[in-house]
Image 1 (cartoon, rainbow, N blue to C red):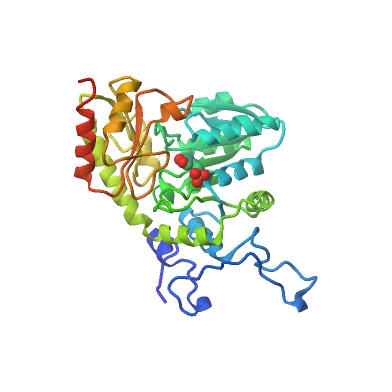
Image 2: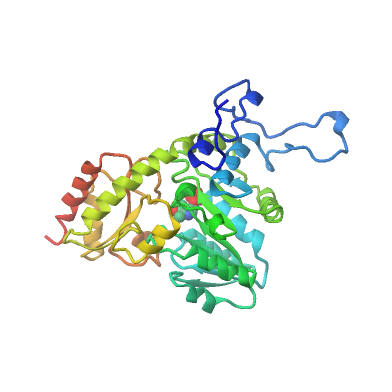
Length: 382
Ligand SMILES: Cc1ncc(COP(=O)(O)O)c(C=O)c1O
């Protein structure tokens, strides 16, 4: 048996929880493709057993949860059928009618819609702030504030929040903090160690990594918080399926190598694009020029992709730029092996501006991607 270290991320990913002896020494634990675990008759009326009904727990999903919790340095993790299921369940578990949530206004669009539309429908108030200054959190707080919702870096304009400072303020006021940690992955940012209560990922991005699953996961400390979120998962029926749980673990096993390459290639391209005459600004927290760079270096251990560029042209020029790209698929996702381009303006009515383009740098050749981008950029305003 491999002698792994349970505080080393690479060891955790490769070996933690892979109980060889339990599974006939299989190096890959099997998929428990079952909806049900039956109870031996002699145990009737006794205490609940570890596995019972698949809407509550599944051993394949649990292996994935164990690895994520270990990576986040959290006591527990719960996996969901999507990132949005994880986000909405954590919010629902911590808010009631009459409460107030403070959320960053650059968070993922459907998250903001869930907070303003659905939670609003049940009498939960909200305030959206940029979140790049701790004073904004202080100012937004009300006596009924129960949750600070963060996304750092945010996934369209890549703004950061000071996680230590927000968590300290929240602790003082008895507010629960949660963060969408998807961009950084559990390898490059460990919010729980900085005092944040719940760290959430869309597993559909880097953790899955192959653009073939929709999944989510939330990590947290404490039996009480775990059981509150788990109850919502069980009652809304949002648990991750066993096949997706198995694929999520498989994706996770190669994530360290993938994000290293995504990050290297993205930063290289971002640096070069900064000097292109048809680009007004490149937003990537890994760039020295980025206003969030100092904080990024303090609270993250590495950088991934995507990043965004502001073109020196209007909406029509930006559309033409996207149309001319040959190596970037157009679509809303990121974190997969393939390069993607997103133009948020037409799909999100409150998108920051019409000439903002998000690029996800995939695992294709850096020079090929850069040449494609510059060929298209050079045509702007001709
Ligand atoms: C930053 C971010 N958070 C959450 C989500 C939602 O994840 P899912 O699509 O797995 O529900 C997404 C999806 O694009 C995202 O980009």
